[in-house]
Length: 451
Image (cartoon, rainbow, N blue to C red; front, side, top):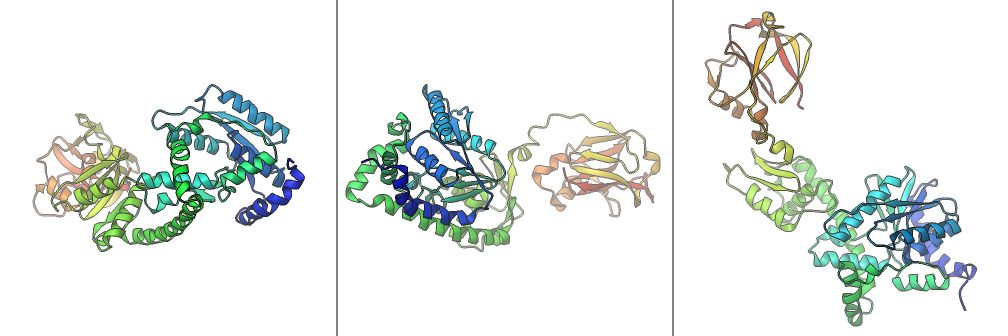
């Protein structure tokens, strides 16, 4: 005898509704729910269950990856089912980039979700216990650490995106049973059985072998993910403390860093390199930065490139530099000297920063204001007689003594008139040069901020 919705209520109120209501304590009362619906069995069951609990608070989204000829038909199916349940639904076509198809499709899907989420909505997905176990297994085979083996969280907060997976503790068998009892229509994606894809291979080839030996393997693996989530939460607390001691998202103080145990160094370095990205760097890359940059000889100009950043050691500090910043000097063409004029209170945006022309106790002659002065790059070998110091000395030595970062030295510019050096613009400010143009109560460009 087929189970009707009214008799089914007695089943899922105990197994699903109670679980859902417990999780709802973490949400605001006015929260709305956007359900990611692919048309498959899992998401169609979720759609029906959520329509019973929150008939006025839900809407659905179907992301059309346009990878199969039947994708448009599936979109029409989802729209028809939502119409029947009186649920608003949007269909969003996406273009999947080249590369790993599974990863790129997932990336396109989440971008579509974020595009349609409203400020008071959370994203609801139909991932279940077997999905969780498969995720952990695949990550284990790829060499993931604690964070990777945490797999999926039931309630996952990612910046402005909150994901809720109310079926995560529900077995695939239970979902099949409920779907059959309620006579819920769904579509069957043939790629789910294509072992060319990692997840389908895991499901079709690996799963039955493991379950034949370990019948409760799926529950055990899923439980491991929760234990890993606890371990990861503890690890994140330790990492935050270590980062507070050693630096911030831009640099690590190696004197402090090297006081940590080797394991904590490795974990901190991995998390620091990850930054705001989704995934941590490969273990091999973390080890290379440790060996080739941090542990290199003190006088080595060590740098390593990974994922759009350069990791550079300077003065016992490890810096994480955007590729464009690190390579800026190499991309500079031969630039001819330029003519520039100064006026009081004027703001100047130069390569080394933003400067403002102000009166000062000792500075340049007011006779130079409004005149055409020359601004040029250093070419090497220049000497500077800094005001207030005895004698001239190499500009290079002054730059080194000021500890101006090597990757910022190309921004240094020399100000002169008739081949007389007036001063030097640097990321540390304007250096006034001793000359016949210095006078008491003159003017000087003062650094306002670095650009």
